[in-house]
Image 1 (cartoon, rainbow, N blue to C red):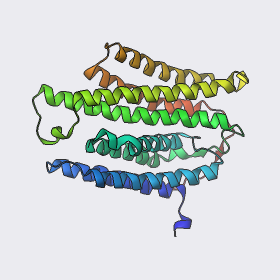
Image 2 (cartoon, rainbow, N blue to C red):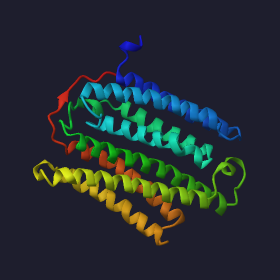
Image 3 (cartoon, rainbow, N blue to C red):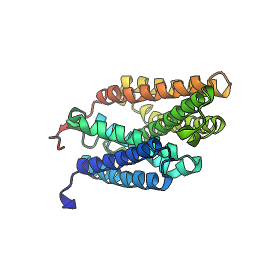
Length: 280
């Protein structure tokens, strides 16, 4: 039975685990309780393993890191954000971060699965025989996962700001970390994501400088624009000119822009594409 399952089958199961975690957390909050950190972590962990298996099988099929179409980019971004949460999320001491992570991962995973056109064309051996370009692409997408977690903490920062402004400190608002903790977490995530994206660009530039003809100008400009925008946000934050609600909204807007950029970046590639029938 399991041997006949495709990569998409495993990814559907992963999305369902994430969705169950989100619904369980919603039910707990609706009843006035804190989402169970252990149950949330277990459901997200199970979804993560299913997604990892699905991406592994896809990687075997396409002969490399599965980053060849919009579907794969969304799946990899969801997997990256979940990886970061599972590694460092418990140190945030916030069950709500797991709740929001389950929501984000479910949305990214299931949305990509629900739009067949995003997976209509699969690219085989996208990076040829160059492991450095493959590492560059994977590192850049992993930084997007960090930015995804940053957007989640930004949402929590807005909610905490709202609760203080309107003096609503009870109920599920009481489960939110303090403004100071959320601000520190957000700044660290922004720094980490920017460092990873910078490293990805440096790795890519080492190859592009040797073979300028291999560079797709549209893809490069979009990626550099995202990097510059996050860099500007970090600079303004460290100078104290971008704080509180403005900082949170900026992080959310930048992640939305990063997600929207995945389509143009993917379409700007010019590898030899191999069309395959999409299996739901």
